Image 1 (cartoon, rainbow, N blue to C red):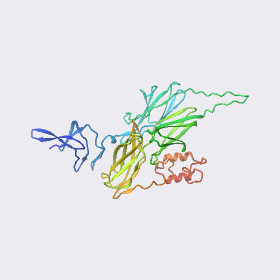
Image 2 (cartoon, rainbow, N blue to C red):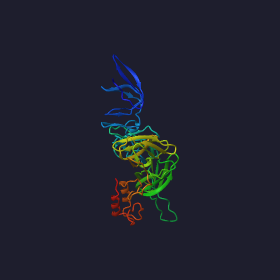
Image 3 (cartoon, rainbow, N blue to C red):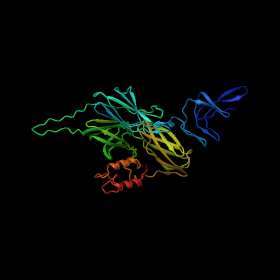
Image 4 (cartoon, rainbow, N blue to C red):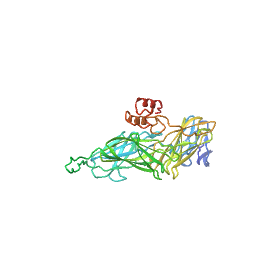
Length: 437
């Protein structure tokens, strides 16, 4: 007898009966043995794999949102387990016959590695774009442009085979000829000139959470706050900036007061020019209802992101599980995890969001344990020293913030770790003690 491997659905199998095989329909069930378990496809679509023990017909459906596993193998089925890459946030600064582009590095997951980028350029919003390969860098200056003409750009990360695997949101800029003029003198005065190093602007747009407060930091200091719209979109500006390079950081808080990870990127500004930063997508917040969950009981995973977005949740222990849910009109999501398949011990979970072809990075991780009892989540503990941007980590971002304040006057209390009014080697030593990487 030859038998099909079954899954969550219907398969056609064939029993051998003398001179011919008679097809029959086998209804949904799991098929297991000592060497495998498959929770699988639902329909045949021609073609099959065969051996002495089974026939497996091909499937036209997505695998169930579960993991098939046994000692010889692990199977990550379904679209939620496909490789993906986060969408870069892009800034565009106009100059004389040129536009300077910078962007955040895309992060690849589940097998995808970003090996380089293409810049798409057009004079028509939405394209078509002409593409240029620029290597594995995060900045490019497009030269030879026509002043007064608006140009539109997208950034597309590529995999190791040179295939474009994501597309940023579009940014635009209009090159302008340099024109520094002196104001007219009056009353026999000495006259003067416009300071060319003042007047630059940075505008930042992206997605946070519906009606959430969005905070923007410039070089480690809070510069401006705004409120995202009901659709989670925000647009904010930093004005009257001097020429130079700034470290801009953005975070938000969900309706429960949970802070997002901080989105950080460098921006270079030029005199009297506006630098547009587009495609900022703050990662979802995430919480669990139990610090320890009795194996076989449910664990509730919840958080907030943009409305009507697809949420992928990673549950990681010895192997990585993936689950999928969606947010409601207020951006809230909730997933009830059956802990029966999980091993006893410690686990971590994190989430990412996808909406309108934009993909966020994974947000912060939350830990929980699978054990013999249920322990509810206790109130949040005090943030540890050295975590200057509030992402529950002490890493290079915090080091950069502290480095900016090194030997400068009046540093914030979050940076002056020993409270002596200065940022010096003592503060860096304290940071090293709490370092998480």
